[in-house]
Length: 232
Length: 232
Image (cartoon, rainbow over all chains, first blue to last red):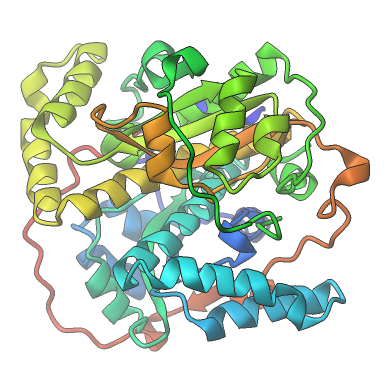
């Protein structure tokens, strides 16, 4: 099945049946999450995998009692950097340069550009920015699960501070951003399964624009060259 | 090819050759973006498609002169709500209820829950929250392009306020969040193509946790029931 067919097959499963997801399918989904692109290639997030029933029950308590969290096979918790620091960026870039057999200094200019751009934005902006990258990875996990015919429920409905406390994330530099229970639908007991999947119509969702639709802007400031290294 | 193989095939193309992406492939990519899940099913974003060369040149000017923007076939601009308002949420929910032949009032409780949750967070948080949803759609477009063997460059390196000005987004309730040129790699002239794709090793990216690793939390406040309707 194509990605598009898989997107039609999937839905935000409301009731799971407790069946275990085989390890090879779980590993495939995690590998897709790992291979997602991220801003500047920083991979400023990670994934915590939980299948321990007792811990899942505790997480359910901080996630509005949503049943999928206890009835899933594995819960993926996406967690992103809480801020950008020179040390964190250097660690990633140095690792990339080592893997590419290039000197660490290759990335110095770009690293400074990033720090200049981000440092001015404040810590909350930085955490949001890192969290956005985790959503790309999260989306790849959703697509990979659908490809494997594993059900998944994208969930933002949890108390992130409580979850961070529970998972001892405080002080690690990571904050939980979004969670994804993986498992199998309980067909007879899922009110959403047979509801029509609704999306904005194409004509509202997509707009085509030409120069005639654009503003007549004058000169614009161009003082940074980012065409050095973005992401791969 | 599987999603994972497609993720290995793709890379953030640095140099495109100007070849046009066929309409059926473009439509497929846009349809994958449209079918992405979003928080509460609100689809609080849309996609602007630009192939007009003169407009692409102007966008390049506000995007650090990155050549892909002028050399792509089509540029996708993702734009998300700048805030949550009762009217916007009602419009979407009413549409969904109409499509499902349910009374509009079905969603009243959930709508108020969302407004209560989001209104306390401030407009900047709301814009970030909507932007995050657009990243899921963005990721689906990246995956769909790779499946179609269309190259794409995920780009955050642009001046969003200038782009919003250029595309006359100000006052529409949408802000640009991220852009994606679609086209074809110029193999002989792309420095990134033959660089090793580097990701954090699995053992750093994935952490498994059990109850023994978690904090010993006491009771936690549970006063909202979100298990009403999330997304499909």
